[in-house]
Length: 104
Image (cartoon, rainbow, N blue to C red; front, side):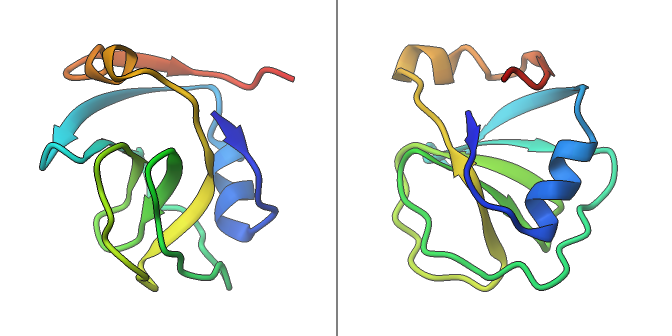
């Protein structure tokens, strides 16, 4: 995953790394994980997510990997970055605890 925005939400997400998160499938269109605490979103703009986007959903306080979704614009979905993963790699996330770390 690549964080490709310099926003309050992206900076706060990065401040939480390293972290271990547990992922689950949501609606056969997203892989989600809940953060230990909500992000400080400041003036982070909403987005029109697409497959391959890594985002944050303000109402639930979870991060999202979109893979089969086309929800349209939402002020509650904050774009953090993008990812490149195969369907098999995404499926391996289900119920898994994943260590998240910064690699430069």
